[in-house]
Image (cartoon, rainbow, N blue to C red; front, side):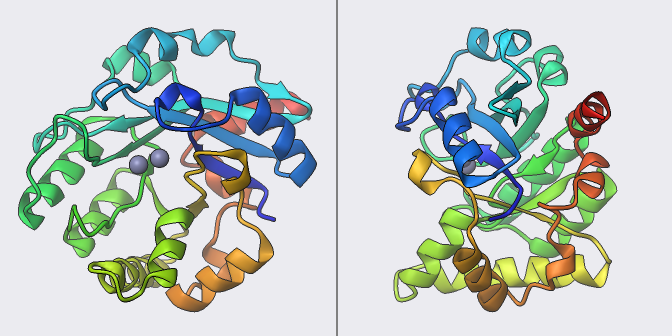
Length: 252
Ligand SMILES: [Zn+2]
Ligand SMILES: [Zn+2]
């Protein structure tokens, strides 16, 4: 089991099934040490409102010895790269993940526009992790994205749910693209000696974490060199996510 899982949805996302406490207790049982609680931002239908994220200071830093990074999976809302949370609020969150999503105000899906939306979002905002960088409904130019992520100190995510779904449904439209483009992303990162993070994108506790079997599959299908997986390398992760660093020092 990897030590961290930094992309998790609670019932506050409006379409997920477990609570913060349920994830924390399950993480303790599974020996996951750090979890990121990243509910969808307000522009997605039925997602959490701004006031929920505003309560960041009321969320415990740890439950059952599991460190909680309370943040958001914000939605990129247009090709200028705007996000759906106030910039001051974003700066208070421990973890900011961003991505393009359906059921939000973002509608354009040409590769050029999607790439602009993501690259501009990285330039304009402090985004710690870019979620599921390539999805078939939102094609992007991988080379431009890797360059922008490296320039702006943003981690690129390997989304366990997305990749394992594509592997299992390889004949579905878009599955091969997702695997090939993610492999291209990893190759470019590894050639630059840059790591990445694997997240579950869990919508229920049963989906949380990355176990040994899932990790072996991801390594196999995506040609991953294990030393570039940062999930167990807290000092590497904390170069991108400062809240992790502050927490480890406080714990020493
Ligand atoms: Zn997402
Ligand atoms: Zn998500």
